[in-house]
Image (tube, rainbow, N blue to C red; front, side, top):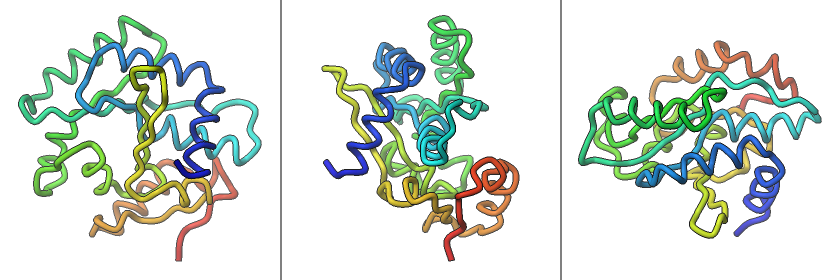
Length: 183
């Protein structure tokens, strides 16, 4: 385990809300079930910016991988179960086994494979609570961009406009002014 991964795990261990959310996801026993994207990215960027208050989340991205059922109905059922556990949190559950359809890609083989096709590298990070309450990290592009405050287009994303629209639409450079766009 590298230094940045250990740092991320320590950050998460100090965040009661993230630990609670991870426990709720763990209780669903989703295949490859994890929390990714904004909840993790924002935590690191907030800490690196010295923010005492966490930036509000639009949603909590829960991912799993189940190619045996790629309908949206199960996602909605899992969201409902998570809302029953914690109605205060904005849950969003996605089966990455079907996301290739929305993105026009070949089928993904896992959650990590799906994250390789995301618009930016710093967001492609997922964490999972394992059996002994250990936190595991999945980051197909590593953690350097996330911790280095670098916004970089994902290498498998052909549409540069999608990356630019996300950066502008999410107002990342305004919220976290130390971020910088990769060359």
